[in-house]
Image (cartoon, rainbow, N blue to C red):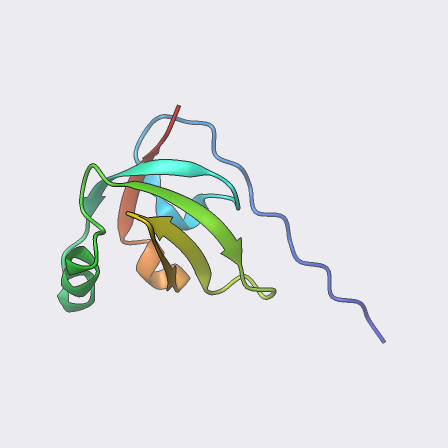
Length: 91
């Protein structure tokens, strides 16, 4: 029986806007923009708006979904949703 070994998620070190999905567990960032569509409007109503601090809490064993903390709330997003949110790393 093969043992499951998750692939490591690369840690981002740049200060240019990047996708939320590229962060590693424990990384913190600030949302800079959100690509608009009907799903993303709902997420904006939940607090995914520019200027909001966000932190990666944990990732599911197979890598999707990922749990994020923002404004005192924890929300899980799939990678395709997190790719539509642009962030900058916190100092």
